[in-house]
Amino acid sequence: MEIGLAALTLFMFTEAFVPRLFAPASALAEGDDKLLRYLWLPFYALAGAGIIVAGRTSWATLRRSPWLVLLSLMAVLSTFWSIETEITARRSTAVMATTLLGVYLAARFDWLTALRLLACVWLAVLAATLVVGLLAPGFARMTDVHVGAWSGAWWEKNQLGGHAARQAFLFAFLAWRDVAWRGAWIVALAVAVTLVVLSTSATALLGLAIGFAVLGAAACMRRGRRTALVFAWGSAAGLVVLALSYVVAPKVLLGLVGREPTLTGRTDIWSELTQAITERPWLGYGYQAFWSVESEPRYWLQKAVEWAAPSGHNGWLDLAVSLGLVGVALFGIDLLLTSARAIKTSLRSPIGVFAIGAIAQYLLFAMSESLFLVQNNIIWATYALISAKLALDAAPRRAPDHSSSSERAIPQSAAAAVGAARMAP
Image (tube, rainbow, N blue to C red; front, side, top):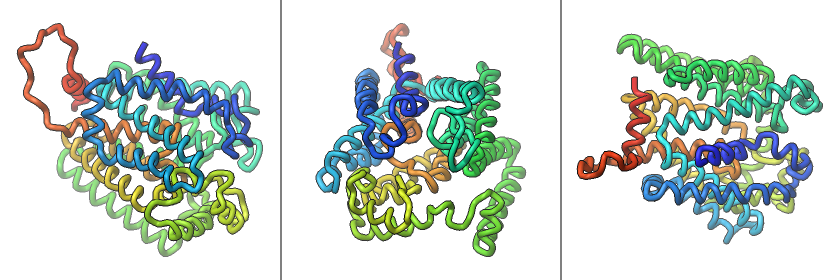
């Protein structure tokens, strides 16, 4: 029952199908999706119940993830200085529940179980998206702006492309390490790659390439020091060439991936948003308050860029406008610690490779999407899972208690060790 409820909750957090079926696009754009607000409430309760079910391991996980917890608490506290108090109060509660969902998964399940759970939910969603796209193209394909591009269970093609690219990496990793279910993950990988292509999203294709590159790098590293050294130097040289190409001929480089210099107007938004941040630099305007319908700063930004921008299309800038430089610093510290733990873990277990690839993709997509500290969003919940799980794994282990009965339930630390062993080289 717990696995089933966890899967149902994760499905809700994918935001697939449900928003399109229960709320029109206009209502979502204006923040007036009242029915969805009530639909979310039982899932917030399930996330809270999960924390209780996980028991002392939940509190241990929270203690080991202070920066993640402080960032979520700051979102709640920003209600006191928000320019839109009601919006911030409601949405900060939602983002706290989203963070707790990730913490619950980290505390309750070993790595293999957690990744299998995520992968099964995503396989069901992406498979349903493919079927709906074939049987009901009017629903799953865009009819304006990017005519014919697949958006699947979501409103926009980049959403489908991003989700499919991230899950393609997850499926590829499990096909590599989870031998028992390898056949299923190979099929899932084929579905995800197909949807990336059908979405026609250039960023998704780049994200897919990064995920496969991380797995390729891991395979090269396993061949020995000489191969690892050649790969490291080759990768560094390639990055230098790309950087110089962008500096010398940015239009040519962007043209190769189907982008124009303003990134479809995003640079104009970023310029105006940077100016807005300088007016309230330390604590921001309150969580999600800047982009509320009644927000005066949003009105002037949209007037300046001459289109109804729904967000900053950049995770760092949107976090700064919500919680200021303090919020950016809290997230930056957690991100640095999580990345360092992922690299350290990769030296002894393949799970570190997964964490590195997931973080790399996360940062890539966050350059053009608002993905940091987002409520009701499985991407943020997944980051919280990875961050909290790596923090928990880094905790010093107590000496085993040989006085306990052999029939007693396996403690969380032992369960995590079992999962790690099944993922071991």
